[in-house]
Length: 244
Ligand code: BTN
Image 1 (cartoon, helix red, strand yellow):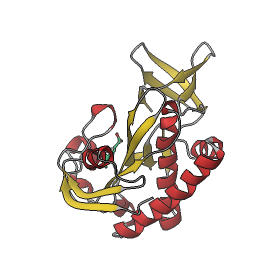
Image 2 (cartoon, helix red, strand yellow; image 1 turned 120 degrees about the vertical axis):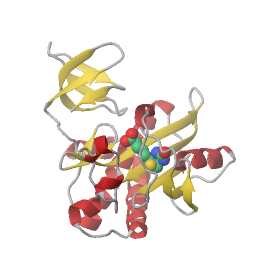
Image 3 (cartoon, protein in one colour; image 1 turned 180 degrees about the horizontal axis):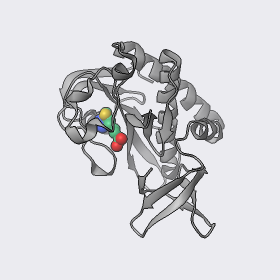
Image 4 (cartoon, protein in one colour; image 1 turned 135 degrees about the horizontal axis):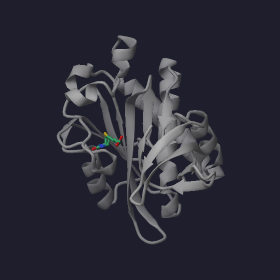
């Protein structure tokens, strides 16, 4: 992981470049890093504000031999890797908000976006995008984001060396990824649940079918969310907008 690193000061999105490289056959573990992104993107087609420097914006190409249905497990694995790196390097405890947000003091510190190129039963490649608010002042974000996001600098009142941080993330990632390929998702699932934001609490969900409140119980083996609805039934949620 990260043997081949491509750095550019500015990109539209590190995801775009990672897709391009993956399509032209780059090796698994290739990492694309940019200082700024002119059209960074997040989950659910949202914009990811990253046209300023100070953050870590990077995308990792993987070619795992797993079923496409299990790809969400790698998003969860990535969130655990980033959390572990933050805990190791900075001794800060963070929480993971399903499926992919890293939260600190109820504010968003990082997000992860997994994009996949797959056939029915085979993954051609995955691009895992990781965005972390590191050395930014909160003022660089648009007004409506300012109360919702946090950066490490803001919290610690000191600059973080992004290179060291990235290396630490890659190390953690590699450990977890090898463990995953060898032993499956169980150990990762456990670490994820240990860090889960609002586990056991009530959340509001908006799915294409309905809006409802439910208790957040945990995650399934395939990375989906398990909630208990008001009838006491357990439901599996693959994708939803959640009001936490
Ligand atoms: C989310 O929280 O919705 C996911 C955000 C993912 C942002 C990262 S930054 C690096 C990579 N490039 C992008 O355009 N997005 C991801």
